[in-house]
Length: 357
View 1 (tube, rainbow, N blue to C red):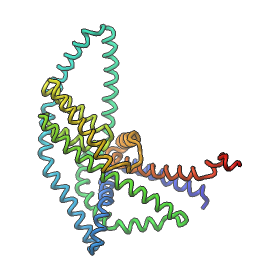
View 2 (cartoon, rainbow, N blue to C red):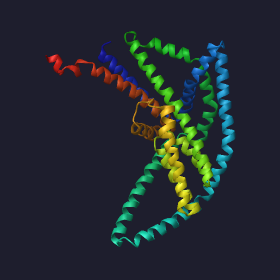
View 3 (cartoon, rainbow, N blue to C red):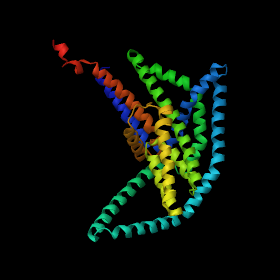
View 4 (tube, one colour):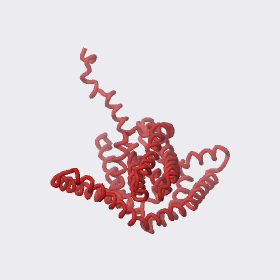
């Protein structure tokens, strides 16, 4: 098989893979989650094997411990979070009315200082912008939660994910060895090196980012609760969980917290305290948590990560959110490899003045 034929074969295989991903995206979520959990638990399983446990015993212990821990955390967190969420939904109309009154006061203040024609034009511009923004955000939210909110999906996550995790974790070494045996022997060392880089990138980023999100969630929840903000626990915790999207989580949390503070207190000082909590959180994240726990593991600019997450959520829902950063990390490693190959190739060095001499 020529190089051209191999390229065509890989291209066709990639297109088929994307087509299957699109067609099966509604049923893939529990399998992808199970594989991801198995991937991150494999080092712990290997350590138990090194201590003398069989692979079956190590897999059983690690899987059972992980899911018992998850269930315990859910039992502890779901009751207070769900009660706050229900109370927030009940008080949402009152908050909306209070915010409307504050907006009317601000509008009256602005109208007294701006000409009528200019004010009407400004209102039209703001109305058009807000309508487009709401439609865009609604489309993204629908894409993210369309495959995640059904009863079937929740049941499949609860029942299928542990089974997939167990079998993937038990057979992980055999699966990787089998895939390694399929690699073209002439390029096996190069492919293994790129796979190692991808593995280091994904493992370091995901574990570090998970710790950052949990720490930020605890900090925001505690800080907003100390400020006295209604539903500060759920606003802060959710803000931390969605902080894996650079800047987006903080913006959503701050807008929500500030809106509740305006409706609840109607004064400037509580709003400034809410802003202070989020400001301190951003300082901690940007200067301490992310540099120490995550660093530059993915090697991608924050703009590319935001684009990947939004595109993945829009195209494939929650499954796309899970796959966005890993796919971009793989692409980043491969692009850097191809760039290194190009910079060392005659195509790049052909015009070098030293060669011409």
